[in-house]
Every structure is written in structure tokens, then in C-alpha cells.
Image 1 (cartoon, rainbow, N blue to C red):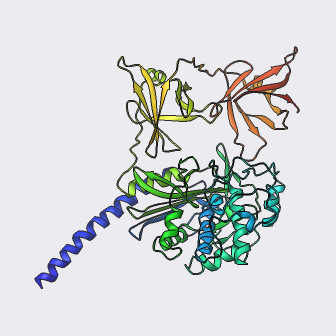
Image 2 (image 1 turned 90 degrees about the vertical axis):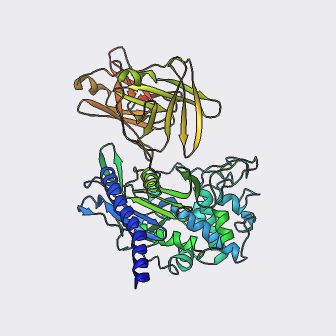
Image 3 (image 1 turned 180 degrees about the vertical axis):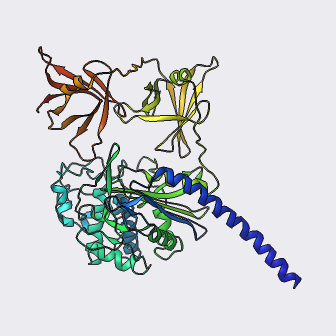
Length: 545
């Protein structure tokens, strides 16, 4: 009896820390996710598993804004490029069955493909050099259904980006080719092969190939964001992402999938190890990508991950094999970045949280960091102080706000990079270190003069003359609109985000969140005739309406 009592007490001592861990995790994640996904907007389904046990599974925000329906953890999402790991595993399974070799050239299966010497492995690893262009397709083109052959025909005659094995460039077209090879070798449509070999055997009941015409229980609406306004996502025929991004699933089905992979129920250990190993280029450099997965680390712990971005949806899954932690964050807004929140959750789950609590710093100190910094390998970065914000950007790129959490340490709201400014012996700023996932790059402060721009006030009446559409020589159209006392610019390309433009002179504006300037051109009567855009060069547009 005494022995049984001791065993019971020992079991409780083991169990109590697990209860404590679960309660602490739930409180912390609830607070973080409620802030990130407010109840009135599109939301997210989140799952966390540790040591083969689900420890957190919740949803936040709305599944449908028009019907005011709350999002649930078992709702079905487009997973975008997370599809690639299913395509990669299908290829590896066929290889294990002796039906193909990763070193086979793709012309063995697609005989009329005009680019020789490209192997299946190079398609898997994004090192084929096959042209990555998606074509200048219009919104109407995006609505059309394509066969796999028609997709291939749309890019196969485009020039290669580089020679096979000589570089790395993320490539959806390469995975379209892999889908076609799966169909050729297996004799099944891609969606049938994936369903019969993965979804059905693993009882992934809420996973499948997306078809907009089908009634799919639990499938939710997807959205895009225009500044503070949500819109229904642009329509996309799901025949177009195909084997690069057309699968639907849930956070729990992805957990079932990951567990089956790690338990050896999908592929052999040897095949899975290849898929989860960073590929090496001809020059010896590693790409941080295997077969359908990115490889990196979270707070020093190795991880295996992938994100997905597709019309209306943005998704992320990550697995830390050492700690056996799996995290999935699926969102129904394409402008969200679940990789940041998912990585933070994983850091908390392994007891290595990202310490980024904002502190206040004097304005004079913030201004002291403003300069142009340069690295021998990464080029230049600009740090500027504008309208009370310290901003960081690559020339011509988006501006990201630096948020202080230490005396000279800053983080970004939307990514996991940490910036630390370096001081000289005299206390002046001599450089900065940018660290992402354990990789640190040092930038030295240059003597290049930084032109800080300061906003001025212009009356709403005076702003009216700039409203209109401006056409550039390449037919790109920039629409300038007004909302109260503010002007905005929106391009006509896919995923063009409306940008606020701020006046710093009577006819000159800078983009609030982008390194770009617009100078409006006037005739002798003061009528606006066009504009000059300064962003990685100069381009002139004429006013067309």
C-alpha cells in the first residue's frame, strides 16, 4: 500500500508541472492572440502540440464578416504554399516505389519541355533556374480554369533565371511541373493521388483540393485589407495554384499530417531526412530549403517550417524536432503574417520567448540613430526619423518601424529581426547589427547625407487638384484619392496596397510606409499635368483623368 501511495504521489509531481505549463501557456497565448486578431475582423485558428499532445487549440476573430460568424478551430482554410510539402512527399513516395529517381531529368516525363538538364531534385529545391514569372495576367485571366499542361505552356518558353544548380529562387512553376510529373507517373490526377495516398489513409477528413464550385463543409471566407478596410479577396481559379498551392485543410489535420510524417507513416526515415536537409548549390552554399520545407531555427532551436499566401488566406506551420513542438496558425486575411506570431508561440512553448517589451526612449536619442548604414554583403539600409517614428528600410522598399525594447535594441512589429546599434568609444553610433534566426549581419554607418523629410499641412481644398489617375510608359496606372485631409496612392497591379502620401512641400509628397516620393508636375497655369515618381530610379507619368 505504501509503495502504491509513493507511486501515485510521484505521478502527481510529474503531472502538476504539465498542468501548470498548460495553464500558463493558455493565458499568455490568449492575451497575445486577442490583441493580434480582434473579434470584429478576420481571424485565426491556432493549434499547439507538445510531445504528441495538443496543448492549445483555439480560434479568434471572424470566419465571415458579412454574416458575423465567429471563427472556429475546425474551420477549413486554403493553405497556399504549405501544399508544396504534400507535392514533395508524393514525389519521394514515387521514388521509394522505384517509379522515378530524383536525378531524372524532367524531359523524361515532359518530353516537349524546352529546358534540358533540369532534374526533379532541382524542382523540389527551387534551384532549377526555370523562369519564375507568373505572367502579366489580368483579374479576368485569374478567373479562368487551366489544365496542368496549359499552366506549363504559359511559362515554358520564358528564358531561364539561371543555370540549374547555380542559384536559388522560390519557384511555384517548378512545383507545377512536379504535379504534372506525379500525374504522368501515377496515372492519377494530382488531387486524386494526394487524397488516396495521404488524406484518406491518415484520416485527414477536412483536407482536400480546393474547388470554388464545390460545397465544402467548414470552408470559410477569405479577405484582403486596404489600410483599415477589409474587402472580399479577389477571385482565383484554384486550378492555377495547382500542386504549388491549391490544398484546403485545418490546423488539426496539419498536426495529424506532421505527426504521421515524424512517426514514419508517410515516408522512410531516409527520405524524410533528405526533405528536411538544407540543399547545397553547385558553389557549396546552402539554401535553407529542403524538399518542400524551409529550415531554420527559433531562438537557437532547429525548426522545419513553411508558410502559405494565397488569395484571402495566409498560413504557417512549424515543427521543432528537438522539443517535439508543433505550431499551426491559419488566418483568413492575406495581409496577415502568421509566421511572426507562430514563431513567437513556438518560442513560448519551448521556454525561450522573444523578449520584446516596448520601452520609451527620448526623441533626441531616436534621432541619433538616423543614418545610412552599409554591409559588404547586404548593401545599404536606411534608418530615418519621421513623424515620431524611427523607420528602417531598403532603398525603394517598405518602411518598417523600429520599436525599442532596450537602450540600443529594437524589434519590428511584423518580423523577428532584432536591430542593435553599435556605439563607438565616444558614445556616437558607429553601426548596427541585424540578427534574424541566429544569423547576424553588421552594417557600418556611412557618411552619406540623409535627407529627412518633414510633413507640412495642406488644406483639403488644395489637395483636390492632385486627385486623379496617372499613367506611366509601361501602362502602370497610379490612382491618387483623397480621404478627408489625406491623400492615398494605389497602383493597378495585383496585391497593390493603398499607400498614404504625406506632403513635405507644396507639390512634393513622401509615402508614409514606403521609400518613395511623388512630385506633381504643373503647367504655367498651376494645373496638374502629371507626376514624377522617385523610387529606385525616376519615372514620369501623365495625368489621364
